[in-house]
Length: 231
Image 1 (tube, rainbow, N blue to C red):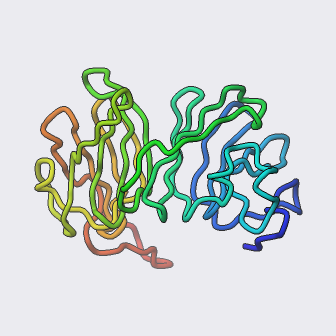
Image 2: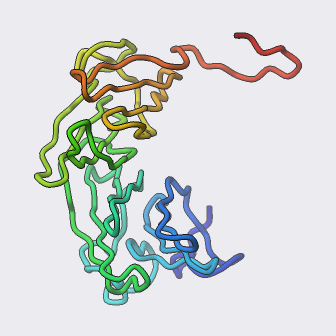
Image 3: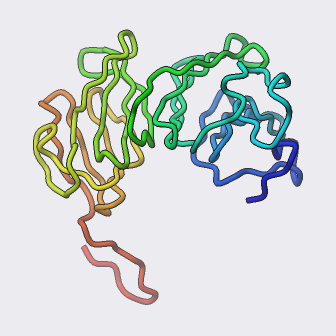
């Protein structure tokens, strides 16, 4: 991607993204996009950088606090809870919270460091557990862990993983290899894209964090032209 001096904002063909990582929907026509160093607000087919101005406008021109104007070290996942969005800064080892006081006016958004001193937070998911406690789930690619933060207290708990490998089991006895994508299903069930193991894993957060493999193995699978599918 091309990084332009104006931050690469605007409409097609003038907006340039730098390896976009994730998207979050605000409403039918508005989105947040996270790329390597910026968070973009996208509306009416135009983008506006609301967090991160590497090589772009001066700090004072940012609608958000100047301490965040230099951008993300390396952008990661994004997850929403009503008008609050969480953004993983994978390279900075932190999670940012962006609060939309007025969803239609980025100048009225606020941002804060919500969690720091993390490893490599990669993907995020927000949802309730079996007890209805709202939590933020975080995959840490280089620590090979899945962590649950209770939103009301910011209390972190590693619910699965911690050592490089490939093994099912309960909680920290399970092994992951660079877990990335997360998806919440029914209450208390979390699916993980275990990228290094070429597998999809399932975590039952209601049962000691029991991890099972639902698809794939440690061997990569590739489509071979003309070859029949196998069961």
